[in-house]
Length: 162
Image (cartoon, rainbow, N blue to C red):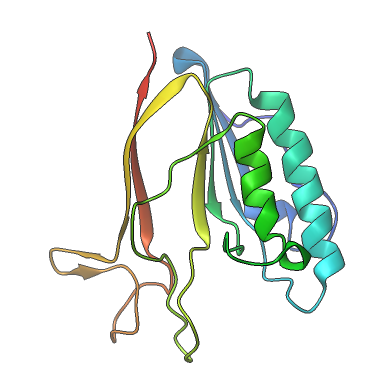
């Protein structure tokens, strides 16, 4: 069922890029999001991260997953919020990080990046994570003609701790 967490009214594009689902039968909260690229308005990027850190603090005590396109690479400097990924991990969230690869290849050129992330509450064990660019005849992402996106699929495997 639809959850109660709504995107903040920081900018018109934010609310439609936040989806909270609560699976009552599983006692699981899933917060999916996409941070619009605010490279030209860093104040909005910081406000979004402030909201996310505050929201994450309210759900970490429940079985929860936060995932999506954060438009933030962990290697970014603090001015571009690269430190915020570590901040979430330092507050108890597990980063389900693929051991290698990147999630984004710019179609128009430029350096590849890790922009897609998943944070898992301590109620789970992270068994694995990987970025998937293609499967069978489906090309999810890349510079290949016919690619569905410029972002790879982030697949993770988690297990509820008993």
